Length: 80
View 1 (cartoon, rainbow, N blue to C red):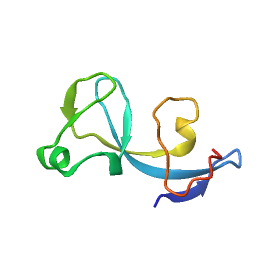
View 2: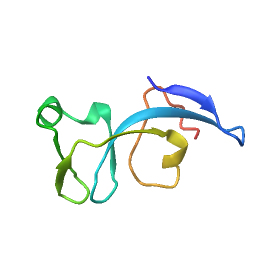
View 3: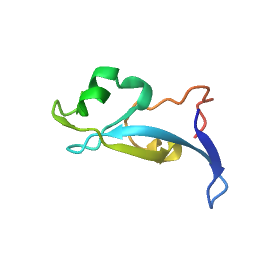
């Protein structure tokens, strides 16, 4: 479960752990990455079809409002 915090404009954001493609920037939630990929340290991007190193980032869900990453946090109400 992510950590909630308020931003400077008063909109509440949830922090999430994602793996970001180093080639195109597409992000996948931690739950979407299987153990084989984590174990090898090499992730396959389903958007650009390239492989790259595991690239962990912590992002706020409000950052995804204008991007098409398909990011859905567990228990989210759809409000961002």
